Image (cartoon, rainbow, N blue to C red; front, side):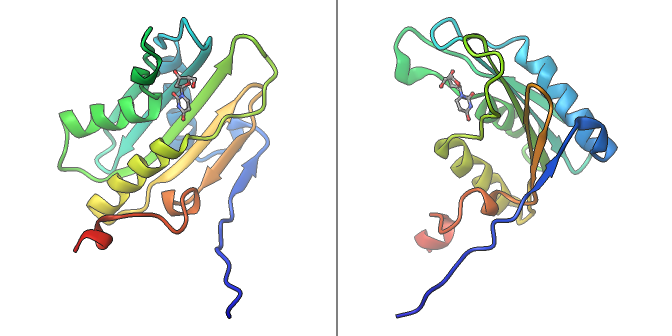
Length: 161
Ligand code: THU
């Protein structure tokens, strides 16, 4: 028997102003995207932004449906938006912010499992780590250097070879 562990370290910034400028821009873009969230059922608004290595920026917000399982997360809207308009350029970083209209001082919300799997797919696709910035109100930022830190022991294309 072996006792193994993962190194899932992250940085907690007290405020957005402590971030490098591309991180600040990315968080701002995610808040802008949040304004277009369509969340009449959960009242949970999410915005996301994706920065490519060529500095292009793509946004996404959560889009809900009366048929609940059809709801789509902001992170996936942003990544699929980037993949649609520029599918050749690696993703450098992704931000996600959220606001729970029913619980204004809620803790930050971390990407769901499905979104972690999708972020990891884009990381593996271009063999380039994706930095992840997660924030909410009142403004702390969690920073992960790679999707692998959010989804250890994952399923990937290596399993299919
Ligand atoms: N949601 C996201 O947009 N991203 C996540 O990572 C978690 C959940 C959305 C989906 C749904 O519209 C609402 O939040 C409540 O689950």
